[in-house]
Image 1 (tube, one colour):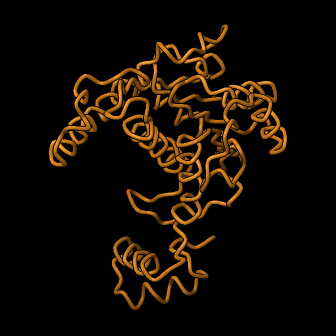
Image 2 (tube, one colour; image 1 turned 90 degrees about the vertical axis):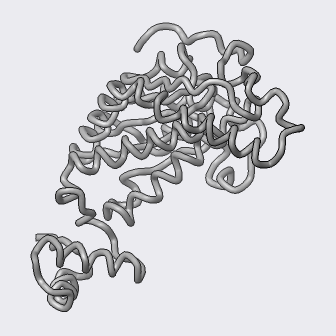
Length: 275
């Protein structure tokens, strides 16, 4: 999608509107509140379903980047940035990727994962600088995450990534999002008003997590990181994962656990031999 960015004002965004269903939130019983939150959460999957064509195109874009030796780079602020970082750090143990193959740029720097850095999301130039620092190029893809769809840091990152020749994907939770205008593939999941007005760590955060799950998982399957639905490239870095690796090898090859264990040892601890 190309063209000028949409109006950056917050007032008209659906994620900023008051939810009529929770108008009396502070006088509800605990059970009423959790019932309401559960009911609102149940709408998220349908909202994601409505944009699955865009999600699929984005997943193919990510797979093309990873398949050509490039990187998947998330960029976001606040909850959105933390969700990108969460997905990035899960890829090495799940798919045995290099830690630099899937990374996340977070407004305010890595320390912002644990503690909010006030004003960091408003710095568009910081997004561009972070992209420059990571030296994004033509083989990479940058996924900009912003529930509002207007975060300046994310706009700066997407804009600079495009200038450097990277593919770009945007994920917003409002229609007509500003970040969509800087993305080759724009995903706009309309999650609507939150139970707690404006708290986009709720439904919007859930939607973004679902989309990130799809992008990374589908892309890894596409580049051969799985066998059927099994994590054959997982990194057995603890007892649970070592047990899982043993069961995977036994299941696929039809051997007993002891033989599977010996085969994994012979392969340097990996369920699938590097050869």
